[in-house]
Image (tube, one colour):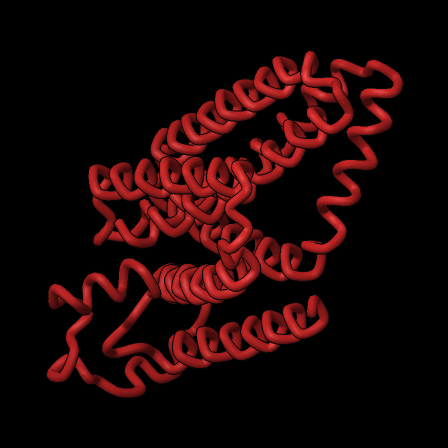
Length: 271
């Protein structure tokens, strides 16, 4: 539940912030008559995101060949790792430019009366975050610890809270530390992506795509078993493994080292 809450809260906040900036700037331009086209774009973005989610499930679980289904799951886990990692680092590097670029594009659309462009602008903002969310949930659903009911509840809570927070921001609540929020939720998402990457490595070893080398580096299941209540929680959220193979451990450690280094560099440059 926590993982799904975090993802939809973060993704929803990014999408609704962009929409909020668009609506606010339209008001400043005295062009609020175009608001309805922004809402149309948002609705289309949500519908297309849900359609993509449906297609993902149909394609993945509609494949009868178990081996091909396994390969597709590995691909989605790796793709989700790349997209989530890129999203965090890109957001850190581009946060200063996003708002100004958005206002510049919107100003040009209002000047020319480009209604389709306005629809597409809000549609793209929602679709981008929606696609990332779909990717995450698809990869998370491969975990045996994933509960669809809990995942849905967490997702709805995150979505509702993101809408409330954006509303408060648009109403003038300037004291909300948004930069700090994005920074540290970004770090959490990188840790989650590291867990997805570790799961992909384990699946590739199980499929004999990658060698095992050393089947178990250590075993701390007597301290914290990944099948215990808390261990299951850590495994679902961060990919915790109480008895990892050597390649799994090295791959996860390498990813986390590089990801955290890029995260720190991106936010130090963004100051």
